[in-house]
Image 1 (cartoon, rainbow, N blue to C red):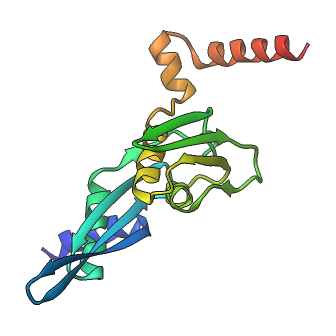
Image 2 (image 1 turned 90 degrees about the vertical axis):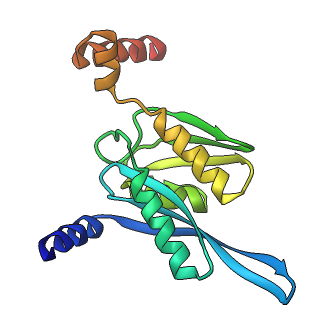
Length: 182
């Protein structure tokens, strides 16, 4: 039993969680108002895995705990180039939220708005330029960011899908770049 608790603690310690948004909601009842809290949390291992969760409870800490558990259950893996940026530019949308994510050269840093910045920091991304178009609702921004990240493809997966070697794919890319520059 104690060994299992230790394993769970080790597993939990490898994740970084960021609280993105807390919303206080009120339910009007006969005696007045009953307040509850909704929390949006992003969890990641800073090595390419990230997830988000939404939790609701009467107390803030309980809402955060529920959101963190939900985030750990729904994690996705994102392929990163050199462990620091995206392989290619990508767009994502959810509801009225639309985000554009662009790969960036080393030293750029994370140029992104609040909810998106939390996702990239917990993901372990170091260089990215992101723009949120449409809504500023943190829930829709985070969901749109996740939609974009799910569309991210690594050269290895593209090569496997096309039945090519990664080196052949990279060589074709260099040929195309040379033609457009010359």
